[in-house]
Length: 209
Image (cartoon, rainbow, N blue to C red; front, side, top):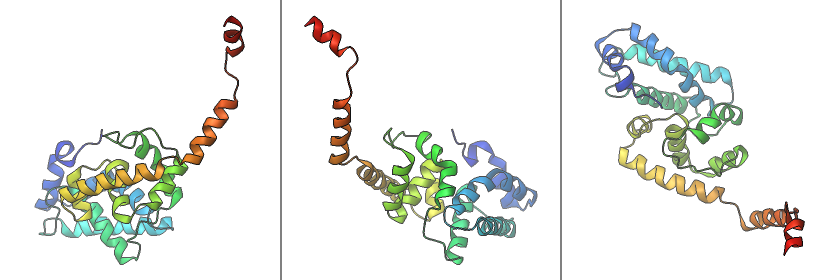
C-alpha cells in the first residue's frame, strides 16, 4: 500500500518549510522515480523528461523556507510543478508514450486500491481505452491508480478540488468500462469458438444417456 507523506515522513515537509535544504535530497530520492515516469508519459525524448524532473527539484530548492514551499502534501506539490514545467515545454497534453506506459502498466491493472478496474483488462485494450478518454479523465486515473495518489494529492497535483476529482474519477471509470466492454461481434466470435471445441467427456456422457 502506498504511504502518504504525512504518515511516512511527517518531518520532511516541515523541514522544507523551515529552510532545511538537505531535505530536498531526501525528497529527490523518495519521489524522483515516480515523477520521471509521470513526465515520461508526456514527452518522446527521455533526456527531456530528465531535464523537466531536474527543474522540478530546482524549483523545490528555490522554495525551501519560502512562502512558495509546499503547504500540505509534498508529492502533490511536486507533480503540480511537473505539470507546470510540461506546459512551459509545450507538452501539457497527455500523449501517452507507450514504451513508458509499459513500465508501470501492471501497477495500473493490479494494485488499484478500490479494484474498480475489474479483471477485464489486457494491455493493448487498456492502452487503446486510455487514449480514447479525455485528458482530465486520463490524468485522474493515472494518478489515482497508476501512482496510488490519494484524492487530496490528486487534487493538489491537478489544481482541482477533492469533490471535482471524485466526480472526474467516477465518470472516467464509467467511460473506461464502456470503452473496454467487448462488442457483440467479439462475444459472438468467442462463443462460436467455444461451441466448436469438443467437450471433455462428452462421448462418455452421451453413451450413458
